[in-house]
Length: 90
Image 1 (cartoon, rainbow, N blue to C red):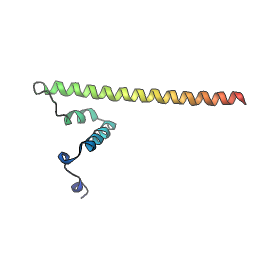
Image 2 (spheres, rainbow, N blue to C red):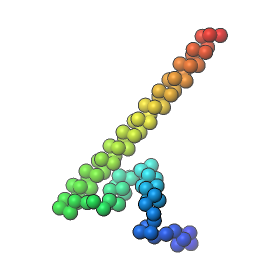
Image 3 (tube, one colour):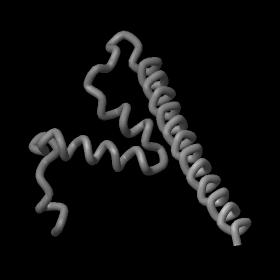
């Protein structure tokens, strides 16, 4: 009943599609789903094009995760250093 209320995909405004794509990147197997949605596919080598797209998406996701982890580690180290410095003063 709820599904009938959703607009058809071709009727979705572009910002909503972007949000859907971002949500898809958070779930597993998202590279294949994102690459299937592309419209700029190579008609002469669709399989090779799909594999290349999936590699690029997976690499981007891994890079973003590594950068996030690096930021979290730096924040945690800063908090730890601050806590240790405050402890030495007492």
